[in-house]
Image (cartoon, rainbow, N blue to C red):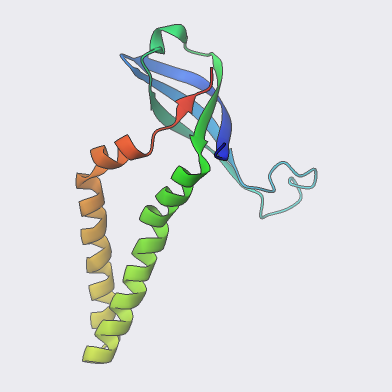
Length: 137
């Protein structure tokens, strides 16, 4: 069985087949008893949209468990963080060695990032279909 990512959440809103769930996303050490004293512990609330044909089974305020696969999380990290970082590094290095200008290299890297995220935004429906979380029954 594939490893899963689980988050406890609360149903915030229900619209058709979309259930909006507020989850508390925690860093790995936030559950530690010394977390209040440590500056590295971090947690933040997020609202995730979950498409389900069983949305009528839920009420606003219900406590639910949101589940996604670890593989999906790693793929999402690749597309959102790793690939853009590699593109910026390659662009800065390539433009700097070709043109010898720090300013031009920085401008080219920012341009590459803007174009990349515009493309990602235009393809968001394709990514939404690939990266679906579910409510555990």
